[in-house]
Length: 352
Image (tube, rainbow, N blue to C red):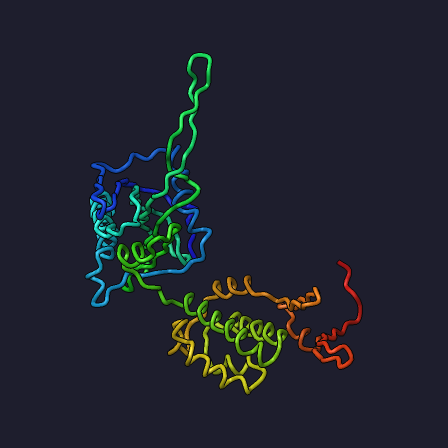
């Protein structure tokens, strides 16, 4: 989990890249940008807003042979080893981006390379490097007094509410390729930013594994448990799965299956489903890993605990007390009406 509240911009360099295939130029500023107290908070909001709103899925620099052949990994290491070199290295980063800007769809724009201090990742205080690109220009009006009239002047500029592309490289887990967050609002060429420029892979840590395994369980519940059982069992299976993750620090698949799958006939179904679909979630060879509690909380917030019926009636199940649904909710079939029904037992109605 990241915390950028106290993060400070120590250094900022601004350059411009064109589209190489259209013979557009590259412009490299001679000196770093002179930051001031007026523009600093605006830039911090512009740089960080998209990362606060986006789910934290981490990446890491990668190379099929060795990390030392990844240009961006080397540039980041050079800056972290010597922060005073950030402006000169920012020129190398911008040139590297320009070399990848050769697809006709890639837009020209400004490149911002910033050095941050007082960032925090997983409660570890670290420095970080921010690389951002603005591409889309927005029309706006300026007004000017001319004698007795107020004149409108149409201009173009950057919308500070939306970052087009960006990444934050945290000085954390260097040996594994650093932990990196990235956003790309204008995905006209997704490979350009992630693959060609940054050359990153997904960082497969405990957060990644926890989210992927629970997503796998969610799909298993929908595609196997629901057809074999009913909507109630689908909801309760996911509730038991999330609760198992929430109360354990380590995941062990056998213990998980024995606790979570009420119907033992579904255990081989689960294992077969994993053989068929596991690669999609990067869990095909995984049977144990540390559990990330924050990731479990994120998944729980998105789970639906409602049974929606075609008679415009909803039954909401309590995830805090799942045993209530198992004890006091029964499903049956009415021969006369030729309809399914849910029977709900209770002592008295609660006052809201």
